[in-house]
Length: 224
Image (cartoon, rainbow, N blue to C red; front, side, top):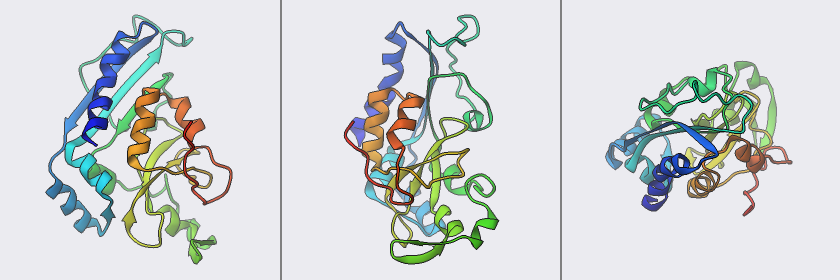
């Protein structure tokens, strides 16, 4: 995990050297401690797998944003690098004409945010379905989804408890302004970070990567 975090942080330098891209933001904070992550688990009655715990023990948050210089919206006077971090809500609430964004929230913020009326809706308690051979409601299923990389207004990546318990062990995508997890592929956190590093956080790449075809199966990502 340390190697993946190092490569993630190194993306800013790679993009800065790329003459076809303009780096806009690059910011991160070191993790607090493994004990803090365990405390959050106890507070929220969740259990994260070791990958997720070790990631947040080393890295509290991470932000990267860039625009392709061939993007019709690119303006050399407007699109300049900022030393500041951007608001964690910026991609979620704005129509940004950018090409790359990673916006990994602090774990405490992920767990304390109210996702009602964005990820799940009270009316969904009336929609019953069968998941993992157990009857549940759409509301209860979607409450298992915890967005942590809010990279655009329409999509985000989140943790998901794929079993009928509180063990958080996989990564899926929320689409349709975060309200749909119905047709997403799944992966591990390390697999997701590898794909982020490979694509330098390209937005369109993630849309294609997680696009699934079978409802609520959360099939694994391919090695594309």
